[in-house]
Length: 283
Image (cartoon, rainbow, N blue to C red):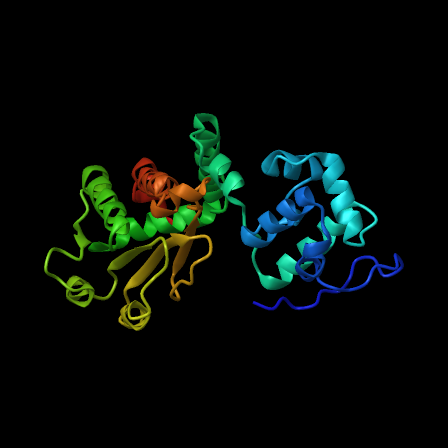
């Protein structure tokens, strides 16, 4: 892939504007054996200099700091930081900052402290975004809705079932989770009518086919609460709650982290149960 030529960060330094990786390829046969080894690791991995200090790069590659300094100077940079800044600009222009295998391995290494810290961080970030007025309005809506349908696919279905169980236990609410086995999403929604409430769980994104269905539900007078992640598109909703769900290690990409979402579901139902229906009758 050809990288866009970045705006150079050193207009007065006399450095030419040749992209960093292009310089590596041009100089490959002029390097010493150790320098060539470093160049090939950067080209083949690729290692992104913009993500590492000189000491971190030395640790990853097993090459001394002095060799790295000579290496970047041979490329025409006055210092490692100059090379690092240009490499970062090029990676930003390309839209990605790849990690080398050594860094991937360290990121994937089991780390109990990092795991629990990440869980706490995601929970705090997810819950702190919800104004008190939104919690009150959602609690009122849960009390007033004749029936509630909690909808989700895959891991999101577990969230739907969790909320249904809490609503039944805490509010004795007429509610159900969908879709049931052998049932389509559209079929699951047929139980809803004007004034009812649809709670859609869509962590990891929503199928485009569901967007017109959600709009039809709202046009029919059905209230829509959508709970999704922090980056995915969402349908037009009466309430939209976003949860942090990104894993703290690349190896965990295969897992959908619903910890913050489960806490949000519990908090919402607990708020409705704690306050009861009566305070909301005055709205």
